[in-house]
Image 1 (tube, rainbow, N blue to C red):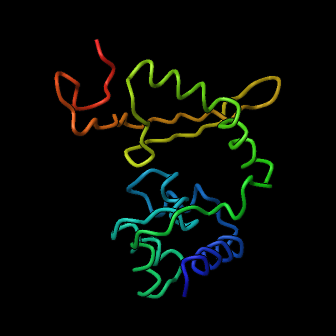
Image 2: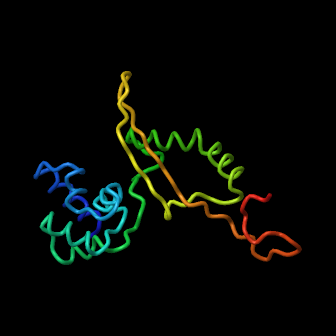
Image 3: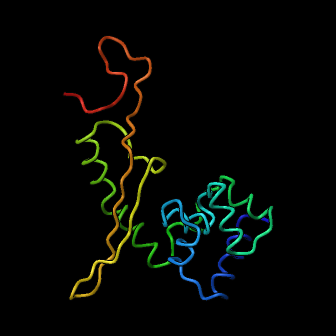
Length: 162
């Protein structure tokens, strides 16, 4: 079985049982609800305890349980640019604001990146009389570039210089 097949199996069971992601997240627990959904979608691994709970919930085999605990090959968007309108809007955000985010982050922190590995994300519904809003909070560790071979007072890392 390939990881994509397991994802489809989980989605089929979710559909057949009429479960919501919130229900699945509460049943598995122990880590961020977003990470649980990402793992079910094949983009993250579940720690062993959560993989066991997921296997019990979905009625999976031991091999499928172990697969949930393996680091997956990440990147599920089948084509670029994405054609799904919701996913495309995130792509559009990066196209429009990506250089702005880069400038503002690097002006504040220095020469580096925001990690998507040492990362937290939350999502909530924000009521609004003009139509509810999606509120997302992304928090990634700043990782400065290393200036290897540095000499003569050149800093070792690209943190913002005083």
